[in-house]
Length: 142
Image 1 (tube, helix red, strand yellow):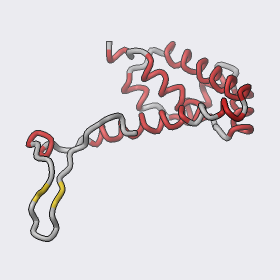
Image 2 (cartoon, rainbow, N blue to C red):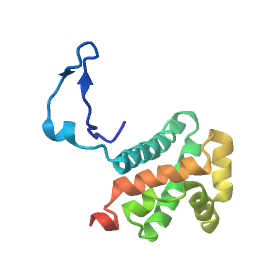
Image 3 (cartoon, rainbow, N blue to C red):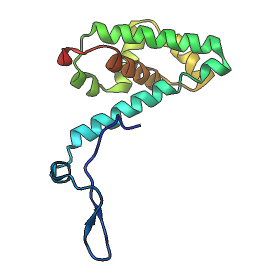
Image 4 (cartoon, one colour):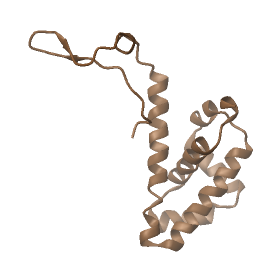
């Protein structure tokens, strides 16, 4: 899912070169903003990581509870940092995952989740990022 974002497009009839389809001058003439596309794709990747956790409840409820608890603790750490949406989007996910999991003494739990469910540190952090962005206004949004 791409965050219900409408990207500008034009359908062109390659036989005679005429444009077809919906005409919206404001959308058709608007340049594509690469930053907006990057943000949309990043948010979609974060939601996909979050979505990988939910099926665990059917296979291993205890593992699901553990994964949700870890994601919750990481969310708390991220919110405590009081980062703006732009700062969250600019995070180096791999480096931040190692830093956060070490700070919160979560590394063993994350390793266990990775071993049992294939959800690595990056996926767990991205699931937490999806929660932080969706649950409450960030400093730049208030």
